[in-house]
Image 1 (tube, one colour):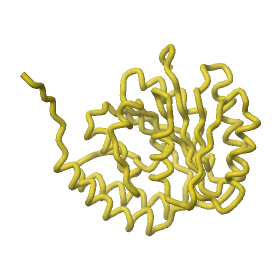
Image 2 (image 1 turned 180 degrees about the horizontal axis):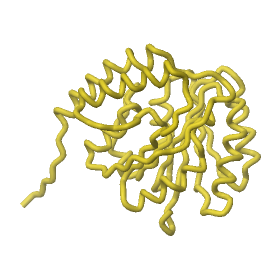
Image 3 (image 1 turned 30 degrees about the vertical axis):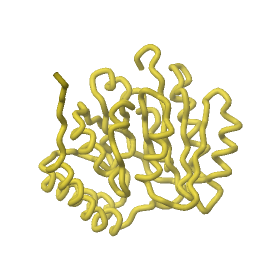
Length: 240
């Protein structure tokens, strides 16, 4: 990181009680010999297991790594959880990653290095450790998205991303639009870099995605983003 830069790590979680303790250990190890994040924001997305209790235990345990806990009154979905984390974050740089241990915290420093040159760094799951159905539906969805928006993003579904806070502040997220963050950031003039990151098998818990919310449901969101992209403008104006 740049000297004096503050970093917030945002981690949304829905029923991930088994994964959170290991994830925090990995984050601590990743920053053991580096400048530590100014905060780790854990967002409980209305979990029905012991996720919230685990978060509060970790907050008390990790005195060397400040943890903040946000909790919803019910499950609102990943877009809302990320949005809440982004708006509560105080760091100049913000990193988001999944809580299911499929994202590797050891990749975070690599993403941060690129923020010296770019405004956002998008993780790409190079050797994706998911089922054939999940990989196939994502590939189809990516192809439809790129054709409709005339873009070529390799993997917008990877939650592991790094951002300059100044660009996230320009966005207004809606339900489902986390899949289109690279497009929305580019519309605001962000310089974006795509980087291959590690992807791991899920060991505990269940995936929150299926055919409907991975392929069919996002089609309506795609049409909304297409409309926004066509109608969006950025201008500079001054009064004489």
